Amino acid sequence: MKNLVAFFSASGVTRGVAERLAQAAQADLFEIAPQVPYTNADLDWTNKRSRSSIESNDPASRPEIAGMPDNLAEYDTVYIGFPIWWYTAPHIIKTFLEEGDFSGKRVVLFATSGGSGMGKTQRDLEPSAPGAHWVAAKLLNARVSEAELTTWVKSLF
Image 1: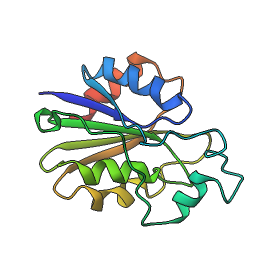
Image 2: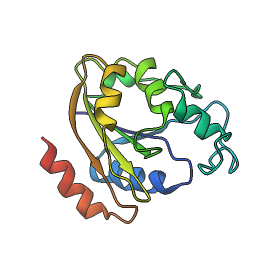
Image 3: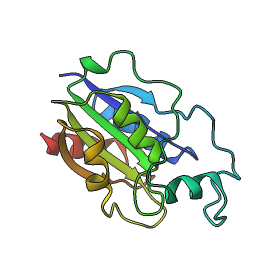
Image 4: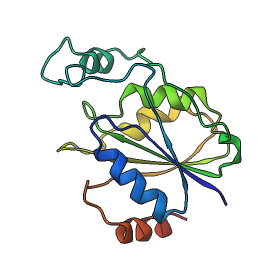
């Protein structure tokens, strides 16, 4: 079984969790990078005119990504991580799911958040990857240990 941890991290928090998860799941690591990187001003959620606010308020928004994993077809399980923005995943995650073929793959969502929960995140993302086998999503604390992640990974299958 081959595993991939794909992640989007705007501030570095999700990156740290993804790196520990990749170790725990014995997985390869792939960063979902925006074609145009986000600036601090872009990420200002208090500004309704910031890039992240505009994207989050537009259901059709699909920020371009810098690329996809070359060998996505080789993976059986894909863990996808991201920060929670406005109670769901940033739209760049839909871009990633829609540009790949996740049919028959186990997709495991994980997220980091400063205060909000997962809400309807998985339900929001499922239409973007028809044919995927969705495994229950999990909100992970930024300080989650590799040992805790190993326990979680083992409990999934």
